[in-house]
Length: 485
Ligand SMILES: Cc1cc2nc3c(=O)[nH]c(=O)nc-3n(C[C@H](O)[C@H](O)[C@H](O)COP(=O)(O)OP(=O)(O)OC[C@H]3O[C@@H](n4cnc5c(N)ncnc54)[C@H](O)[C@@H]3O)c2cc1C
Image (tube, rainbow, N blue to C red; front, side, top):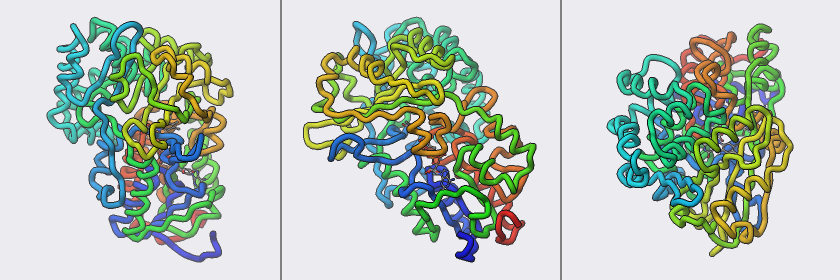
């Protein structure tokens, strides 16, 4: 790389949604930007591929873009002009239960509440206050820790979000249906549901579903980086793929460097440019559990016992709050539960381009201990079969990925962890380490912009956007030079 003798205002290492968002925010301010990507394709956790049979297009990682459609930064960009189209389902979530109709999170709050029996009012009262100003709410929730722009609403959120999901749901709701719906949403936290702050994700996803039903991207998740990359190029940015950066000396001269990488890669690549004490703190970063994922080519739709389930982009499998909480807790202690909590997405129900005519794709994963190589195929497929008898007969082909495969696929998924690191009370706001500005490092020219910074995992680009704001403050203070100089 160094023989190019070229200079940039900013170099971004990694082209995930955060790397591309950082690059766009910088280019919008007139900076010259180069993005370097290890893989042959941009996109990180947002790629799509024929993993099973020809004509079946599967999302390798992210599938449903709840935070994508609500991201303040994405919403500010003309991504539709660059080919991104969200497909919004009638329901965000279906949560099947044994021997009763599935609990549904419909697009309308009234319809959702209608299925919650005695908890109808409690659910409405929980979600409705945040629907008056959803843009304001998601602007604060997807921002770094600081004084919120809408303090009253944020306080109202904070006093609920701080609780363990189990405590909160048991206090708020009387019946199993609303409790299960809330637990399914909170389960995305990849934490035991009796940990403080796990109610936060339950609440965020419940609110999100009543603002915009959880969508998929037309044509596959790869449409997101494709649109971001196209916009970046239009703004004058440059992207090079197939370039895995391993040391600071490989980077061209620039004023600032932004890393859309894991903290351990930042430490490894930037070791000559960062103080030892900071490197040691990065070394103590906790990545958390991994995932085991299956993709299926299916001979038809999933034969749910309750056909309403077909209306949802996402199906939470795991039964009651108690069952989901027990499974997630066991998983966090290093076990592989027989009946895991499973997140299932059915993109082809919404987007016919994902599978040949009359065929379908299926996508499901469960959380497993970091680095696990256990095969969870039977456990996941049994959970589907439990609520959709005859499902297994529809499988034409399957593709498996365990945490080791995920790490090999993307070096940001350390131990197979998909959210950029544990988002518990100790690491939620202080990722990767406790600093006033979490995107900066002790070297003012080196910044982190990946999901290992606030607001954390998910395809929303907000980590990249906020990191770019920090980088823009530093840029005028430096002339372009190699990182080691
Ligand atoms: C199975 C799974 C399911 C998920 N489901 C969802 C979902 O439904 N919805 C959702 O919103 N999110 C989901 N996520 C999470 C989401 O994909 C991530 O949070 C998001 O992609 C993080 O973006 P990022 O830009 O921080 O990093 P990444 O997307 O991981 O991108 C980082 C990029 O940097 C590159 N890179 C790393 N190191 C180097 C290097 N040294 N040199 C050059 N390039 C490098 C990588 O190749 C990669 O392309 C899922 C993730 C997984 C794995």
